[in-house]
Length: 453
Ligand code: SAH
Image (cartoon, rainbow, N blue to C red; front, top):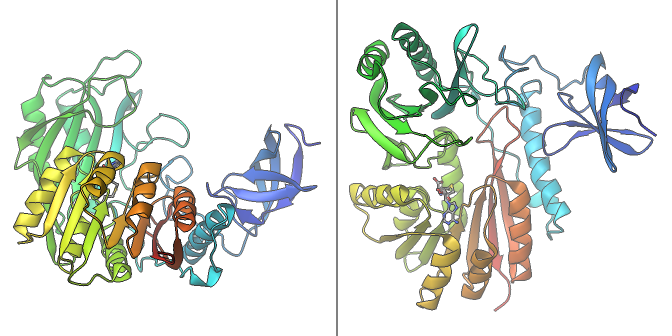
């Protein structure tokens, strides 16, 4: 029996879905953080559960051939990236395996050979177009950065390898301006202070939107703070204040006030222009997003008479790409502002065959079906929790010839695919895409087609 405190040597056989190393001691599974497949490590058991134990590395006996030096000095503290000690090519293999493992676990009928190799990035750095950092204060002054692994403490960083250099500069300028004008970070415990978070969004031209999340609308020295930041970081084209006065771990509240510029930025995907507002969802890795969407559209193989649904459509990115080929596209999305943007985006790109609905997919899609609006091709791109059962049920009743499922979570993807399989669909193609290098996350596009009538 393993006990807490046991020290032993193990060889890492695999990585689990959270990126922890997996080893076995007398056939009992042990999960070890920061270990890489192939490592021989000395570990100390720090937790024992009924079906598994957890351990921490106390020494590397023989490093895996896939072990690499983390390209970021904050890697050990920061909770943002998990796989920085692993060779990038190996990360891509891990992500493909993750998809295969989830499919197998859900008992999906498929042959591994149809799961393509993960499409990676040539230059897997500085890829993010959005950063959300917390702002706190300690004895060293203002701290701005992501949360520490497993805690709500801020890791103060001034160089994040996955965000743009311009965004790094805004972080530095913002910190200096807060110090200069004596503006306090918000303290969750005492509920005093002003600035809770900053969110920076940038487009491919590196124009920046700075969103300052504060606990109240008015605060001391607000105007000079904004003037200072805007003048010291010339890429900023707009500044928005977001008010979050709730006791919550959510980053943003619901109220936005534009303090400088237009309150939006625009970006280009494929040959379409998109408006992005502070609170709308927009894929965070533009280069990979373009690849991802092109694959989704290729899989959809839309003919000019086809009616296409884009469920969970956000600001209509996939919808508008589909609309260029289809007879008509129906987009469904829960966030009202995203649909406002989607409609504007359609107009701006001269697309008049896309119709957008605000509301829960699980309500709108059944309603469309009741009105006899049926899709020939369904594209879904749900959040991590996957599709609601009402959505998959309605798709099955609607019987489109093809379903293209874009997913950021292989586990809910596998669950939903199994349901669709039971409803008469079969997997044809699977393409993992690395939207989030250095993290355990993987985006996947799946094509399913109908086998029964
Ligand atoms: N296809 C878009 C957005 C994908 S992200 C793109 O690639 O940009 C998932 C989207 O689903 C988000 O915009 C989110 O607001 C939306 N969403 C979440 N739950 C929903 C629900 N129950 N019904 C409809 N949309 C939902």
